[in-house]
Length: 442
Image (cartoon, rainbow, N blue to C red; front, side, top):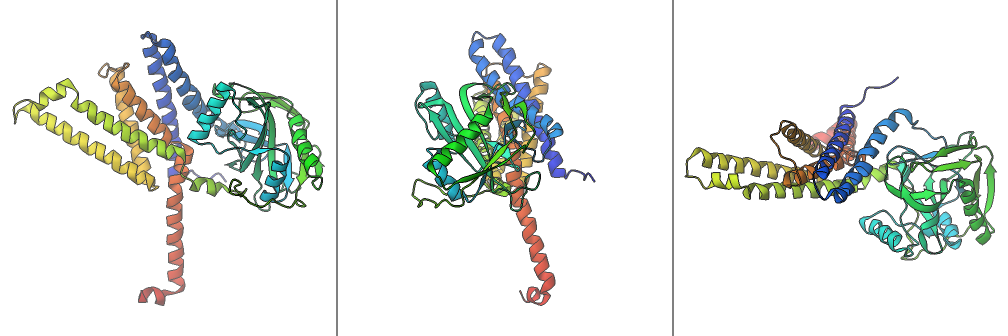
């Protein structure tokens, strides 16, 4: 039977929707201001960025959770919930054996997505400089992103590359039909860089014949490692044509070749060769997401900017310099005290957030949501002048912080500590029931 949603999950879904509405409102406000400004072409960039990377992904996530099945049927999913590339390759063997045969075949392991590697792929694409270990966009399978990805550049051009992602199958997991394999992969060939049809994000475009890329991966491995055998699960999925998460059309015959690398002797480890360790969905949750760091930085920046703007406000300075004991002077003191308390509260909650404080995250979300709502109401009633000024900048910071805090990785990361605390409490209670005398002595 369908179980009712926990209150925390319902809260996260509602605030996720609020974040999407806030991002849409911010895009509309900037669009209105861009029409009134001679800098309209430049302001189009933040409007496109907010729409492509904040609004549309959230809308896709909300909708795809309703109609995209959450079980395995031979397709990966994007972080936005859209159907991604087809699963078209399997591997029997360990992670080190897989890494050995791929490296011997001339494949480079893709870098993790960081600020540095993201900047590197942007620079290499614009300057057409080689980046053989450029990161690949994350795709989801078994509820988690890929464990490892490999690629081969074509003629040193970062726009064109062969690449394949691998996921380690859960222990005891069987493919449809009862077959078993240790790894599943999705291989595609990037032909160029363009805009996603569904989200308008900048992304690589893939060649539609994914079967050719699948066969290329198999051939490159077997040419350099004769001890690798291959078995083919015919009609693993029905042959079909579809589109991936970027809107690129692809076709496949539905067969699944499975490479057997168990006879391969792994290469000796070296300092520049990190081991391939299968991860679980919980491993992903345990890593602090980038959205948490972004939210804390935005909250700190917003609090400091609001405080500075308050002291540089002409009306506030006039009230502060009125005679001691006057109504204006008292009002200035009250505003200063309230502003200081709010800033300290935000900084304290941000610090608690870094400690994986689940309640701190919820309080920050509520505080930001009410502040954005108040700003929006003031704008609609004509009480708040939002133009190309500090008010718009402050509203932008609040919206971005709210989006970061309401993201799924941020919610899962803060909930994890709560679950661990409950588990430890349950274990302690169980131990006390089994050994009541020991507990009394303590």
